[in-house]
Length: 242
Image 1 (tube, rainbow, N blue to C red):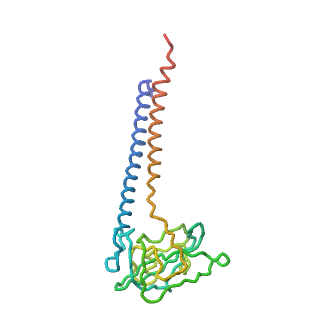
Image 2 (spheres, helix red, strand yellow; image 1 turned 90 degrees about the vertical axis):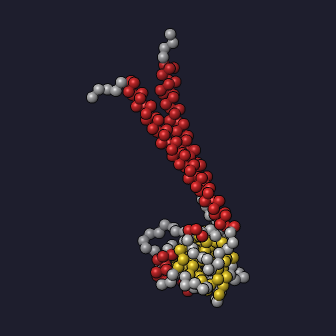
Image 3 (cartoon, rainbow, N blue to C red; image 1 turned 45 degrees about the horizontal axis):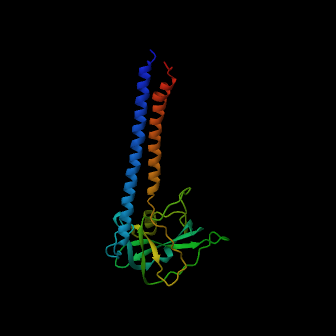
């Protein structure tokens, strides 16, 4: 096989550089597009948070209602409470308390992430005492996706203390219909139930996409700079002066 001529080698290097620049520039613009999508989502979340609270009748729990405020009435299913383990709040580790709320006038129930309680350091299996009002209560909060999941080995526990809680599986386990969303409770139904509710604002991570875009554009510029240096400037510097 004949060896490539100097002209062919220069063409190969040029095409490779152009291809690399095209790919890195496209990835940079894709990251900018992702940032624009996240910014639109951030604005949509803010707008939903300013809308009037949803009541029992209009509650669907679908994606279009996520991040909306809700003011619901129902009965706590206190014996169905689940304690999600290894959940931090304010720098401490404890439990997220999740209790189904049987909605008044509805056949469905809704998982309510009621708040956070510390874990007993001496006995990890000891459940904290909760003040759960009987009778019909009014619960205020913000609709969110199902409780966040942590990495878990195996199938997980089926007791009161769990690592994760899948609404569909939990509904089948209890034999009750559950709406797909969950409610992050923001105000106590009782005067003081001892639960912390310092829920973080919904994160959309816009700035990381700008960071990734900068990296891709910088790599694109580096490819151009290397080509110019090795294929244009350096050969000219090596030419003998007449």
